[in-house]
Image (tube, rainbow, N blue to C red; front, side, top):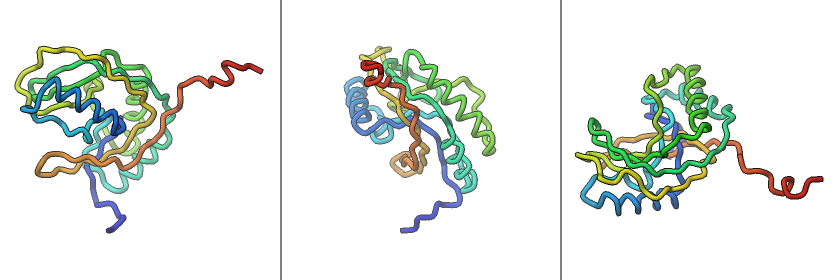
Length: 190
């Protein structure tokens, strides 16, 4: 197997939950929307930060360098709102409020990706996790019991189109700065 990257890849930056959280979200989505809807597979659940599209090797290297230089805080995210976009027919899950650290991460990422030749999306950022596609109408439920997620990294992800739908592969992770207080120094000042 070759370790070289193809001439171009379809890439995006995302918040990528661990497998346990993905499975928890998938179980809740199954209970909420049932099995007669085209749900996103658990292993594909994520929140996109910036979509890059088709990226050359050189652009990917630039994006990875930019991402490695980002200094952003980790944050708590509480996913609790269910929504539906009728035009793309997508059912999604989102936080009721976007943490300032999330907005700052998206802003910093977009501002630095300009140096790699990317133009940020002009639309306001709306953090959401796609739960299902081809959903004709919204659910009667607008919120669920919050799903708490301590976001401590972001990822570069490749999207590969397959006959059964998109398949995502995390290529690289970058840590966010820890925001938990140092309990030892807080409890035992010198």
